[in-house]
Amino acid sequence: MKKSILLFIILPYFLSAQVGISTADPTKTLDINGELRTRTLPQGAATDDILSTDTNGNVRKISRSDLGGGTSSGFNNSILGYDPKPLATRPQPPGSVPGGGTATEIGCKKWTGNNHIYCAYQLSQGVNWFNAYSFGKQMGGYLVTMPNDAERIWVATNIVASGTGYNLANNIWIGFNKIQRPGNPDRLQWITGEEFRMNWSTNPATTENWFATGEPNNSGGTEGSTHIYNTAGNTERRWNDLNGTTTTFTGSAMNQLIIEFNE
Image (cartoon, rainbow, N blue to C red):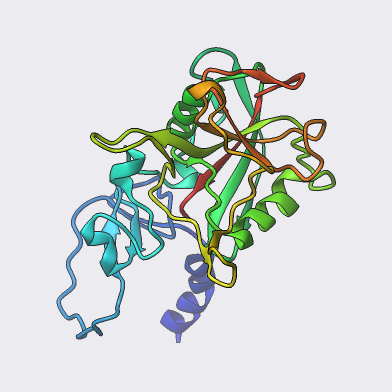
């Protein structure tokens, strides 16, 4: 009877607490400081996801297609140039920004459409596209990508628009930039390797993009970095291509960013 009463008392604690094995400071529900062994594993299905760990030992699910260098969503770490980190590992506070100035995190929201988290940042000064990309890497995420209307509309409604609590009214760099491939013309591409969703109901077929009329136009042959117009430049917050070294456009500094995290 005494054993039963003791178990009844301590069980609720373990159900809600973080438990550490060989560590006095667990950071997850179960935190093991050492190797893990499972003596019996059931036979899985061919469509099962695979468990993987990041550099910090955090276990996560990935699709089998990820082993081919890309994912079912088209995300490609090789194209991005680095492995994104979990949201919880991002620097807090964000600290200095590549190229100068500091950043303040305004807030983060999760979209259930892909289970990604989007964080808004206010910078103390405008940054060019390349430093914005580096800031995304520094935070462990990446400049927001929106290859389909559903994601773009969610970001616009929940992060960008007035009334969201973030009110990102200035120009915002996004993760769509010109690349050069040997022997081929320069082209714009999402930094994650994702492709635009196609709309085959039009003739010719179109992509689900949000570029302003006539854009991108690579004006002067020097443009190739994409941003969301500020409210003064375009009330619909359409996209436009600019020279990637730009830090101010239409009277608005490039001092607000959205960083996307794959979780």
